[in-house]
Image (cartoon, rainbow, N blue to C red; front, side, top):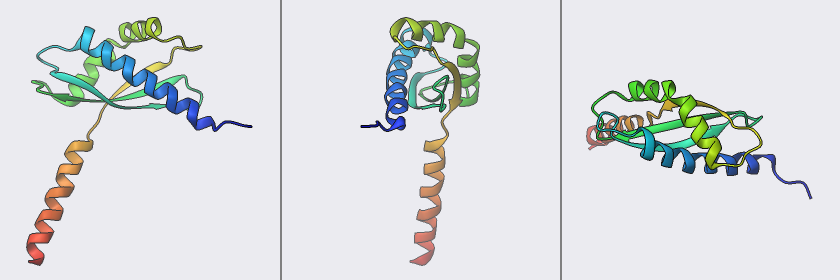
Length: 119
């Protein structure tokens, strides 16, 4: 019975999400970055690259700046990840700011305005 190839990617994504979340809390988080959260991890088809989407609560610097800070520390984070997970290949890390909450808020505002206009 053949397994769904997407299952392996999802399992590895979840393992990486949990491990990176802990690494960020233990080694990166500070008052400037606020409380860092990994919202999702997307793996490339070959499982050699992990795109890590992050959010922050209580930050004093912009979200894209936080992604840049993490990008400068990605080698350190990658080594920590390798020590926590026993993967055949340690993926390259790409950090990206997750704009989803801002987009959702804009959509909600537009929908509320449209609803008020209809009334």
